[in-house]
Length: 120
Image (cartoon, rainbow, N blue to C red; front, top):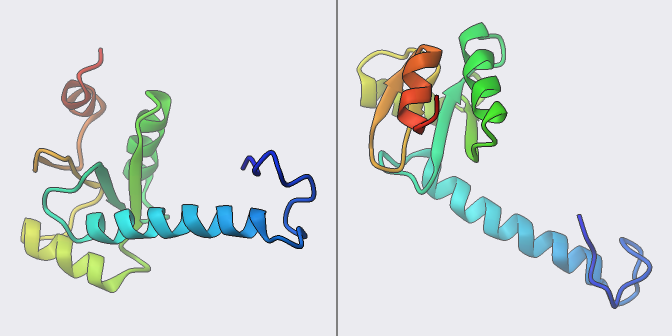
C-alpha cells in the first residue's frame, strides 16, 4: 500500500498518516463488503464458496485470470451467508455467484462463466 508522500516513516509516523490511510481504506472496503454479502443485487460479483471446494477454486482462478474484481464469502465460516444462499437458491450449491444485475450462477462451468463475463 502506498503511504502519503508527506509521510516518509510509514506505520510508525508520529502524525499517524499511514494508519489513517489504512483505516480509511478498511472502512470503505468493509462498508461495501457488508452491503454486498447479503444483497441479491450486489455492487460487484460475490462468490459464495468454501475453502475445500475444488469447483470454487476453479471458478475463482478463472475470475482471477480475467482480472475480475469480486468478493469472496466463505460459507463454511459465515453461517449467515450460508443461510442467505440457502434461502436464495433453496439448496446450497457452491460456488454460487451473484452478479450486479441479479443473475445467479450455481456451480457454473467455465464456458458458462466466460459467457456471463463476456469473454471468450
